[in-house]
Length: 296
Image (tube, rainbow, N blue to C red; front, side, top):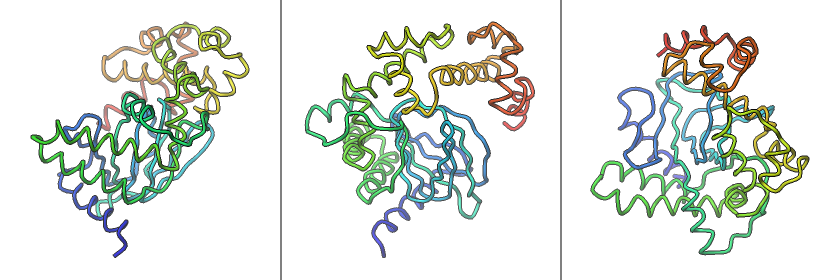
């Protein structure tokens, strides 16, 4: 039997032990979770954190900015920044569920690894989200991490070692460039990552591109170009996504009405908020929130 397929089958069989029903399983190991879906989903909006995702079975389509990507069995997806996407699971069934492994990435661990060895990577890479084939070494490390989820007495000592190993394997993989560049101080991608952090903390404020570029020691044109390259969005589009996602959360989780949610996230015009919300989520705020609550 092909060793890569054998390792993948071991992971699939093991994952089934954790799912009496579809959903997300938190393993107890910080940042490490499993996902299993038995039916397609369409146009789910979310912000990916820096993370590594391995698709073990099924197929998913993700839209990033104006680009569309399809991920199938044995695809490794790595994101190096917080990045907004629209995803649809296009192949999933009770007989053949869509399965993924998800590990949030730790910039501190990456920084330590970068200080311990030389990595022949580009200082500035392209998008903050890329995909490649998962190799056997990575699947083996994730399998050992899953086994630890059943041995809580060993997790405190052994989980950090395996997680560090996974970070190293990612850094030395074909996708290592996007992690290297974001975590290399002074690189353009590192500056863009800093700008993204600032936007997340200040998305309610009016956005002035020139001031934000100056804050991160970049010319306005260079800042705009690199930001758009990494995120597939302009800074203004990125801020708008932050505002609309937060408004949706406020209406869903804290029962804000439309107007209060709009003002809370920085809109001065409720009608503008309604237009932009409908353009992004497909229907007006209240209808969208009611539909989500009814589904849940």
